[in-house]
Length: 309
Length: 250
Image: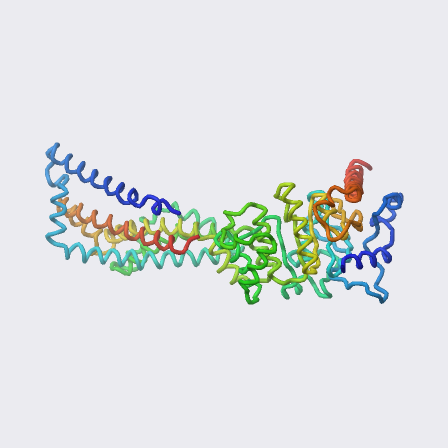
């Protein structure tokens, strides 16, 4: 399994410094078992079987008029890696995703996707987006929705393939259903099939399960992991659910807000492939706790800075 | 499944029964109150009018229909085109939208005499007036509908670099169809009114003119016969728009 090799390779390269650098003197990462917390700037690959970088973000800052949404964000995502981004609402995680996807211009810093700008990667059809709202066209059937976006991307649509993909996400038999006839979870599955049908290498998912109930979320998580494993995509997945962030990830990026910064990056050490049983394991609980702690630390520090001198 | 699919009999029989009741009530009022024909003719007298000179009514109905169709079509096409432009241009929207929306409250009837001054009498002026009247509802509704495309849909299309033309044809337009047709139906109704007003003020033919002449000669049966034909014509125009909507909408 490629994922396993990669993670092992990463840990040998990973430096155990906090993303916050000098601001955070404690070395809490050493006390956490099975978890690697470390800086997100990686050493350059020195030969070997180091996977190539799919997304490279350097010193990214994004302003919306007077508001700084993202400040000085550095992140590397390897090709074929599943990276989740978690943070409080308004921490700029969606902005990060949109900037990577070429839907938002950076104010400062640089984003590279396969060595080119996000905008030209977008034009080349490098991205499959899944948004929080499924954004299915209500006047088209599930199958037509899947086919439609690929056609809009200027590629020849393949109905048989689209049918297959709907089967892959568990929607065989619902090809002709309209979005209004589908549940939220089913509609989001169609949206995932639609993104997969684009054949893009990079999947950008923005809280795609945000409006689903807990049980459906967990099921969808298992399924997304499975689809990702089968198709070897690079996935950047934004969520506000800690357990989702840990369950899905090879690496989990924790952000703090106002302005959005990376608080820490965690290597997730869980069995692969994963199924629902992982949720009950101690390893899973420990890593959820570690990510949650990092989230709270970032949150507390931001609030104390606000009150302080 | 629409109401008509489920209960086809009710769809046809209920309005027919209502119409029959209305005609009977009309007849009863004339008979019971013993109204003179110049105040209100009986349904029979009106039917008689229509049967005695069908060619007169058909010819004028055709003239009016032509005015409604050409003027209405020109008006709604211009209204929709303008809406498409305004929906895409922030500059134009900021500059023009307030006026184009408030122009709805301007009684367009007041403009008819002006058109008479500029364009003279004749069917061309009538068509222009109908176009002017039909323009606004379609414009306002379509502009609203085209602006209201969900952001998520636009992001989706941008994410695959679909471009403005595809985005318009495949997402903005279909998403706006309900709003566009709401505007078109209002335009259709107003086009009929506009045609009648135009025939009063601007021309000397058509059902509107027939109403005017009949009233001047106190021939109420002529007037009511013309109104009945106009009613049928208005229904047909509105029905045509509704039929197109049924055909294209989702």
